[in-house]
Image (cartoon, rainbow, N blue to C red; front, side):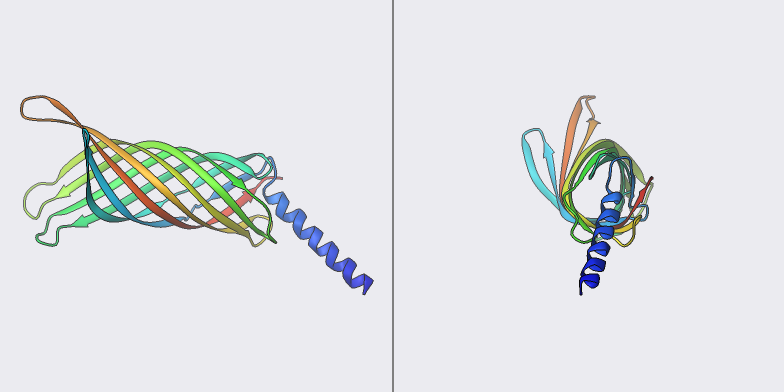
Amino acid sequence: MKKILFLIAVLLAGNLMVAQAQTEKGKWLLNGSSRLSFDSGKEKYKSGSTTSDSYKFTRLTFEPQVGYFVIDKLPVGLLIELSRESWKDPEDDDKSVYSSFIVGPFVRYYITDLDGLWPYAQAAVGIGSYKERWIPGEGDSQDDKSSLFGYRLGVGATYFVNDRVGFDVYLGYGNDTEKYTYEDEVSRDTDYKYIYGFVQFNLGIVVSLGQ
């Protein structure tokens, strides 16, 4: 019995050492090289002091991350988010295609090890661009571009299946602000702002590299 208990203790200690090594200082974190997320939410339209609801939307997002553990359990790094969204008028053949690009820093904190499962909290902020292409049923298409600012706040968990690879799940809130300037017929510039708030659910793969 003592030998069995000793063996169990050794195995548990070894598992803990491996799990801790995955999140220790000096490691590199590669997250989401094949990450896809599906968002749903509501868009708001703002011009001056007036804010009104626009339409509900869905979009597909590709979101790779590269981070470095500056201290144990705390990676900081770069997040890139590519999104594509499309909408079609049910009453005619008009179609709108939206694409966005955001890049910026992120920080993640792994809270504790639960037998290989690491819950965490994460925050990110970034800037980028937004492009809308309107494709009418008849006639030429039209492109509009604008600047973009966004932030993300959420929680998640990574389950490490070995000392390098883990499966990642994330649930959070995102907010994007799109700004552009429109010049009307009398050559006066008008600033417009669109504000997007949405819930984000991500599934991905985490790779921990380093000695």
